[in-house]
Structure formats: structure tokens, C-alpha cells
Amino acid sequence: MTTQDLTAAQFNETVNDNDIVLVDFWASWCGPCRQFAPTFAASAEKHPDVVHAKVDTEAEQELAAAAQIRSIPTLMAFKKGKLVFNQAGALPPAALEDLVQQIKSFDVDAAIAAQETDQA
Image (tube, rainbow, N blue to C red; front, side, top):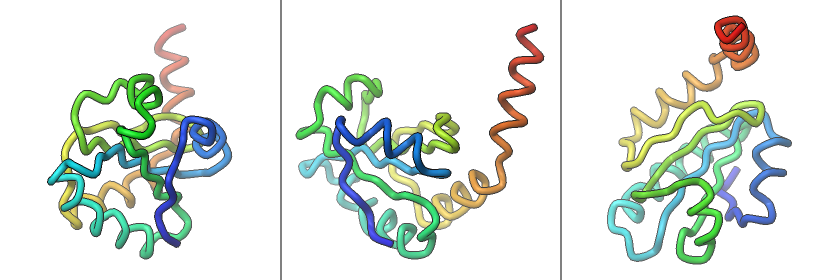
């Protein structure tokens, strides 16, 4: 599977309708963003079961502001519609692969249940 461009209009639907979504917030003028792009694309090819989406922060300024993007590239990961990872900076291939594996094995339902128990 290839990466897909994501707009504000598609964001919530994409995050909520897919099990795992990785979102790369980037800009064409950003050197580290351009360096990370092949790594992100390779991960998309290796993991067709994970949506790899890209948000151009120049074209989608309101979405970037809503996501509180302060530095690019920023990578966010969602599982079952819940934000489970949010970090600025380009990841090397091995670190991105490790992150994907951790997200796949992460039990978001148990984490939410534990959080709710802690708050009670």
C-alpha cells in the first residue's frame, strides 16, 4: 500500500474508520521531512494493513493548528481512533518499524479501561 494524502475533511473519518493510522505532518521546504519520506513510504509498502497518511502542513494549516503541530516532521499514530503516539522528528527505519510493531501489539481497549479505573 502506498501513502495517502490527508486533508482536514478526511482526517476524522480516516482515523476513526481504520484500525491503525500513522500520520506524517510535513512540508515540502523541510529537509528532515524530505529525508523521512522514503522511510515512511517503505513502511507503507511493508505494512499494507496500516494506513500511512501524510498531511502537508502548508496546504492544511488549520488541521496542523488543530493537531498542535509545533515542529515538523511530526508523526502521530492512532489505534482504534485513539492517539497512541505523538512525536516530532524523523525516525530512522528501524525505529519506525519498532513503533509499528509496538502499536500493532498495543491493547488500546485495555489501556482505556485501566485509565477509566484509575479515574474512578
